[in-house]
Image (cartoon, rainbow, N blue to C red; front, side, top):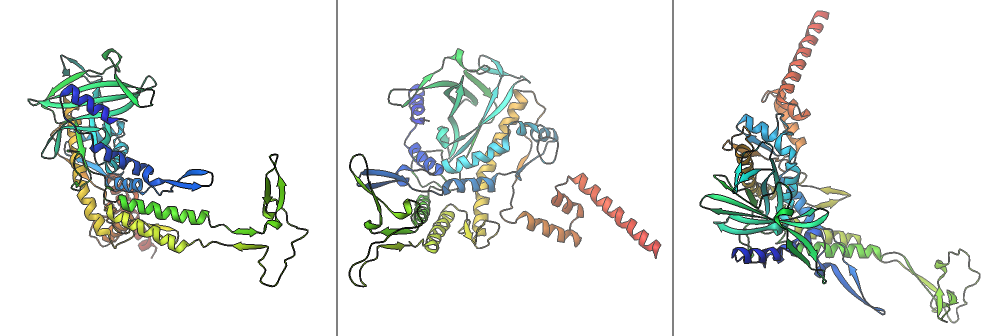
Length: 499
């Protein structure tokens, strides 16, 4: 998507001065995340018949790094702790696994996990709130229980900060690609603040290609926009309808105020080294097959229609028996009619080169020094090594801070909209906290084993161990404990009676 076109549009129509140069860096990060950077992965080869291109093999480690950070920070073990019971039931459902409620309808956890990955390759991620089907007069909204809350999840290439105060984006525009009537379109949503009121403007653009193939954007008239969409709305007293977060690192790149930098922006040289080492390993294997060099007298000759003579070696005609061989002339130093060549695959050296590059990549991306370690056919992960686990723990704890702020911010916006626009019985000011999954510190197996030992020692109730071991609710765990105690007493009575 050509975000520069929308930056130019906003600069002209709203008198802004948004700089588009930073988005070139984001595009470079996107290429690394996809695993194909033309300047790195295109190799020119010159042969007798001209120049050719070969694509360098890639392990696509930048994407793996972003996936791992997303899985460490926001996964199926992450939960919310909400003070008000009615609010918790509205958002999370009534079960302890938090598998119901509005967040389930929004597929929140799945999309939020993907947003963390997007934010870590692009530098910033945004939760953007919208309310569909709402009614209003003169831009002022009216409560409607039939309205629907929706969320967009945008990477940095779709985020255009307009106002930034003390590092916090207070006004922004968001550009999203979509389909309308089977045709590509772009949705531009602008959030501005004036005198304490927030104005959200919606604009739609159809996408066409000119002769050169460059996409053009034509604004769609209001009567052709999707049903239930208003051109502009204004709300008073609400929190921001968007929430941003970035990897927890001070940006050392100029420009892009309000935006962060990719988690691997400091590791591009290491990522390049990984692909160089992997490509060299792959090439050694590809070119490492046995080669047999024949004297031309051993080859069968044939002439094509144009009179050009061709030589076919014995192993190309699928024959097992040959009737004659040329008789060498001269002494014992006469060269053989054929010889065999077995190239050295250099597997040990290549393996070490790839491993060294992966260690550097892991270290530069703040995952510890040995996140990716291949040893005897197995991959060592963060829960299996201790050498640099402390680095990972510190970095993970640090990166939880901006994500937690963004999660709580967008939940408060959702609750405000649910109460004031949908009439839902919720409390937008209730306490909200995030319970993080810390299995990157202690694995689930280690935690369960320790809990079992503590339960046997009487340090914690046995129902706690049963709940963790078998994924039981608190009520089910108490019931299991009571049944086990009853069975034990019955056994003792039978034994005593038998004696």
